[in-house]
Length: 326
Ligand SMILES: N[C@@H](CCC(=O)N[C@@H](CS)C(=O)NCC(=O)O)C(=O)O
Image (cartoon, rainbow, N blue to C red; front, side, top):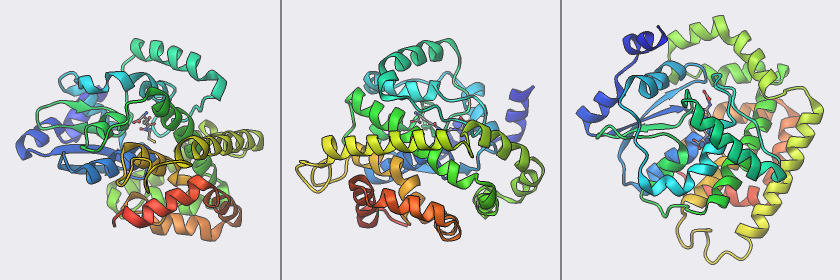
């Protein structure tokens, strides 16, 4: 039933990619995993693409249409070595739309990644983005596959992928949703989710379902639970110190990747961006809404200021202002 609905209401992205000869990127536009993949595609230049950007929940039907109504996705062999860490986060992600985060404690990583792999093998991937449909029908189905195919120096060390994908990404997301989903910031969140690019039909639908979705997301991200917030913040601070000590200090060139940014630089900057809020996040597409979040909530401003002052925060701002384009 739902698959028929997808077919009837959504574009056929396989056909679009084939007939136009251009890859089709399906996204939740302001997701940081999406930002990571989009930035790599733009910087690598090897795969021309067109983006179909959605709000959370709005993405469900088009993404299911690709995952469930097409030929089986093909994994390029170059990504096999990375699948464990990349899949760990995906599998720890709820199948519910827009409700994803289950960060791992450092000591849980090995066991959790293994369990996640087993669970993932047992059930089909559902609504995660980013998703890239290539003109030959191949689907790259997470940000790491896309990044490593983008033409930039790939990141092939599974423990580093895990550091960014399973530690940094989920925690920075939990924190930014704790900011965005605070009852006092509801107008800002609505302005983000109802950005004009998502269309009038969606804006009307959000008016009907927004309260329910927000409630569900608040539960999922433990918004208002001060202990959960402190634990997340502590993990994140520890992760950032770890990255500064092991990846930033002692790097040879301006970037971790040397004289030019590689996949690792972009993963780090994009995945920390939600708590540092560089103006050019997502090519500046949502800069107004994020600036409002900071301007209207002094608690958020203080937290963002704290993360901006960390070594990773400074690095993220520097890289964004130096090389990210509008
Ligand atoms: N490890 C995955 C994580 C992707 C992920 O968590 N995507 C989130 C967006 S931030 C998502 O699609 N959530 C919506 C859903 O699960 O339906 C990747 O690198 O692509």
